[in-house]
Image 1 (cartoon, helix red, strand yellow):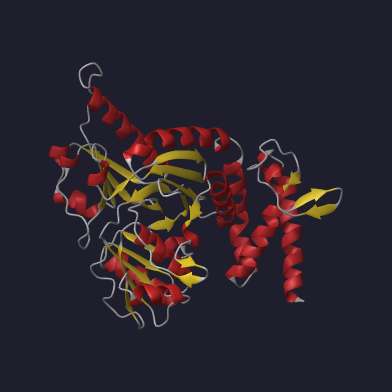
Image 2 (spheres, rainbow, N blue to C red):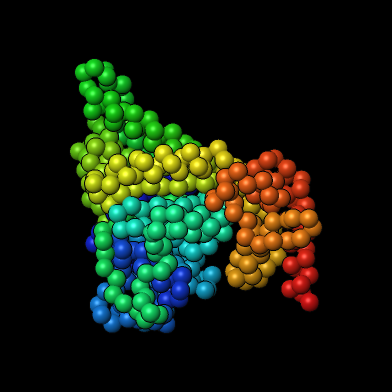
Length: 402
């Protein structure tokens, strides 16, 4: 499981290496969060070229050079070349100690994964399947867009197919941190305060317990210390720091090698905060509001989504797809062919020997009992699900060879 986090990118330096459509989406998301964005690429999309021309971003029209990642808060490699992407990760994370580094579609070379995001300007929802099923993530995102009459970040930047300026509404930048075996430091008083005497302290204590539980679920190596026990090397070695009070750790943010932190008493003072969560194994849906005015709306939506998605089979479905993912990736040479296969796989519904498209995945009809991969998996019929997947995979591979 990945750790859901909303990053404060306001005026922080962000680097995107690459100028294609994937890089474009990364840039748009960073700009919406107030990031100070630089792009390095010999070529760029129409939108990125336009944004550079009007001064919204900086574009270095060239190949990546040694030292280019130095001084950035967040770095993303989104080129079509594996060697360039790997070089970005090595220099940014391993040499320059930048915490937030993403190599598109290469989970081992990421400290965070991007999220599918939906926003109506006030509320923001992000969806992650922990890298196991982007196709399912996309389907859920599209469902949210229709349900909330909201907008995906993928549609921003163009009007009538022409590039337009992008204004920053100050939205947070939703990501999912890969914390497996990474050191995370929790700084708080060790003792449990008396509820009757210290209501606020008790609430913070409960938040600390929740964060520790979440970190453990994500496979992090968790260390807990009182504020007066913190030494410089504790901070140097920490990927993420969570403090119950802003004053617990004196830490400059955004400079080379700095870690990222959450302040539980003052969320705006940290570099990230943990949103309201709906979790069903590897399905994580995060819900947040742009301002305090939307808190009640967030609570209502969170309750509704928890009832719909938790313990409803989505986690099992995503886990199943994850177990077959490596096999499917090897079978198809291009991302488009892989994506097309996954779309066919999760969409297929069998009725009297006929195949009808567009399985609802229980989104529009929770009581649906159609013969489909989603229902077989959530009902525990894994033998049939595996047989169906294998047969479909064989048929598609044969067709692609012919």
